[in-house]
Image (cartoon, helix red, strand yellow):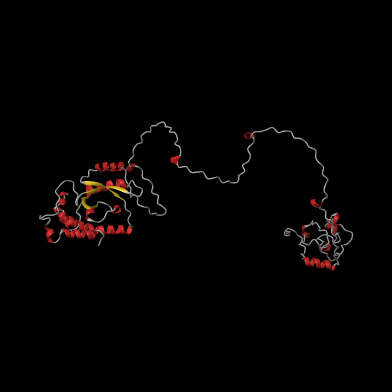
Length: 391
């Protein structure tokens, strides 16, 4: 849009297309839609108007402020002369009505080969070819591979290996190997634990340890200095978690009954273990004195039970601690801390002590007078049987 803010002349009045067409009709010139008329090239921006190309020349306003209206429009707006192919002296004619032409079939131009007349045969003269030099197959260039159709072969008779002819023996030269340093299992680095995606129960295999491992742990057990103990082998037995919890709960009750049984029937062993009179009285009440503990010979995970034959009263330091240190040497080298085979130190008797004495099952001393007060040995045997599964 032209900016008239900096001009002293007022802008020309704007007219719509309808007004311009109406003025053209009033002047007696009716625009024809298909009449090609030149479009003026605007030289002055003040006279710019948007009109269709079919608008007559009279539709454009001509006079500019400050100019004479008698000046010819051709001098103000030079007309664009249409090209020669658009010039026509005759006025446009009205369209002629359509007259259909009669159909006249044309003769086919194409003649198929079997309809063409036969050409007479002209024999060609024979021209002998020069003989080609022979090239053997291994010197010919390789041809591209073309897969051949499958042709089934007749089955060949099977000959087992023991019926085949023996191959001649060719002795191999002996190459001595350098001796490898031996590293025991408990000194090898632990392997990272990789949990399995799904549990697949497998048949329990009888894991037979090698004689080398057994001799190693027997030698290691001799270094601990524990006497009056046997080294036994036990296998891992997977238990249901609920049943394992019941066994541990029953052990708390069995522990109390076992202490009472030992306090009344194994007084000599308690004295040999270094227990005082006050400590023995505490054991008879079902309580363990200071530096004494109940040890389970075979753990529940390896087939142990809560029977009195699987329990032993032992000093916490140094014996009970040394037993568990020996067990930890085997479990800590396993990836899941549950080895399939364990070598366990098993103390002898109901009370462990380091020495040799005559073991008795009771007497008439002042420590055993309570046996005749109603605490018979058969009573404790019945308690032991009931304590195996808990009550």
